[in-house]
Length: 108
Image 1 (cartoon, rainbow, N blue to C red):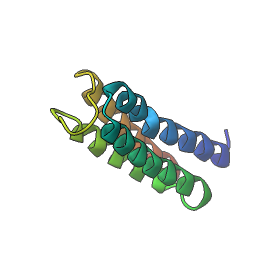
Image 2: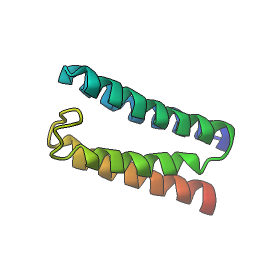
Image 3: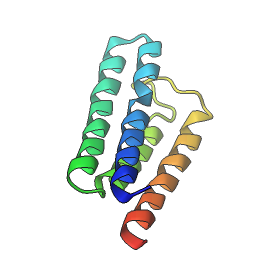
Image 4: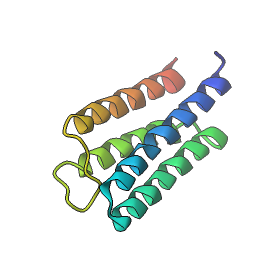
């Protein structure tokens, strides 16, 4: 796969990962939580778009910030309720993927 296609796939992946919490926000039942999760998902979608059209560095940055967003849901009553197993899995995936993209695009 060429670099342009790889960046496009990584951008789509970040946008989908960023949108995962929309479903949790909807399932939570609190309108405020849903809108907060949607707003943050749009920020991750923006990072994905910037990674696609401007510079690939927005992709690992977005993934690293998503790991922080994952951690902010741990024992949180203000954000969407997330299954206990989901948060550490998602943090690990986000950080590994961010590292992979830096290595892929900056080193190799």
